[in-house]
Image: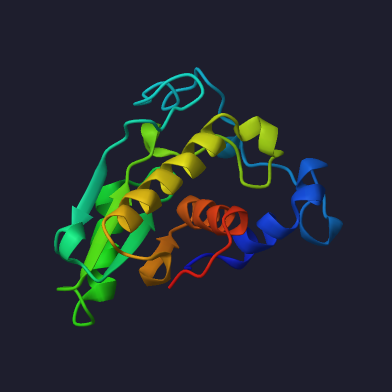
Length: 178
């Protein structure tokens, strides 16, 4: 798992986060950019709707077809990024080290964000986007395992908000990943 210390710590400190406290009990004030609400520019151009805003979002891929791959890398882009952006990074990471046996998969967040608030915000303020994003990763992992690649041969990697989401997914779905 590629992630940041803050994101991993966030998953472990959920109780403090729900009270508006960050690591070591410090009061957290979200940045203005993290205070967007439904109706703000960029929050309405969602692929899905209602309780599952990320339903039907596209997935970009690179490498061999999933059925012929021996391993997979599930790449999760950050806020404002795209699947194409993170896929480019993923291709650079596997270059010369198994690119002919590794399928890269990068789901696209609806509205270019997985959830509207900061990762330090109470979970309820990021719903239904957070649950939808976690379900999106779950569906993608299920597709990978149905193609014959076990979770132990899957890398979950993300950048920025994508790293936070990948960390949260792993915390909620503990098993051996690559």
